[in-house]
Image (cartoon, rainbow over all chains, first blue to last red; front, side, top):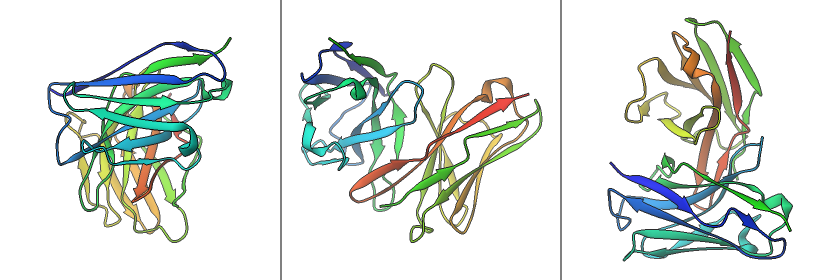
Length: 122
Length: 111
């Protein structure tokens, strides 16, 4: 059964770069049928899509975060990664990685990781 | 881009039914959505994909108590025979070729 697991530092200083990795196990990230995405949730708030990547490296990002976000993929390790630069306290959130169905009409998230809390503080 | 509107909360008694609404913004009434459940302290869980026709496809292991329906720009999630474990936040999601959007979520309380 396919699973996703986020990893990375739980504490990042303001103005620095947040870096997280999502490891996919139980299946291949190199599937024609899926994108892979990052979503975050500030404490007590709702979900915000950050961006998504295909195994080929094709990406698209939330316009509100696009200038600070880079998502990359390493098919040899079955992983994809998130970098968010120039972080502030407003970037404190639980960060989720998720599998995204990819077909003509369907682009929804159908499998989520457990999430990892990242706190931005000095 | 599409916008999704959800009421902030809903409540119903144990064993009864509750119907949640997700409304698509003007010009986007035909869009497909997905429903996700987030129990307290847990990650979201995909429940179903729901089309404007009312046709829906549930995720693996989602109980029969969960069903979907549609009317115009409204997408509904109905939970029948409400159980204590259904107390959670429910989010709708939609997309187009350049973005994903989540609703603000509805908190369901089981009385």
